[in-house]
Length: 73
Image (tube, helix red, strand yellow):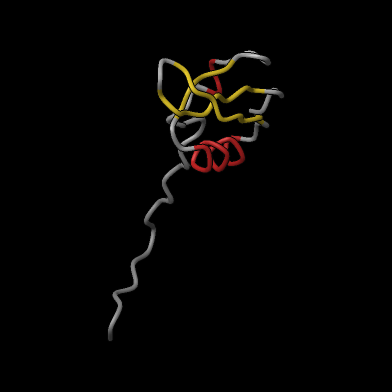
C-alpha cells in the first residue's frame, strides 16, 4: 500500500489573527507604508478587513500607503 492510514490523530487548530501586517493593531483611518500592494491586499482579504491603497513617493522612495477602512476581525 502506498499510504499508511492512521487513526486518532488530532487536527491542529488553525492559526488565528496571524498576519505580517498590523491590521489588528490599526484603527480605521490608520495607515502604513509597504512596497508590495498585491501582497497587502491579499493579506487584508484573508484577515477580513478592507483597505485602500495608493502609490506614494515618500523620502525619495516609491512605495504604497495602506489605509484600513473597516474593522475586520
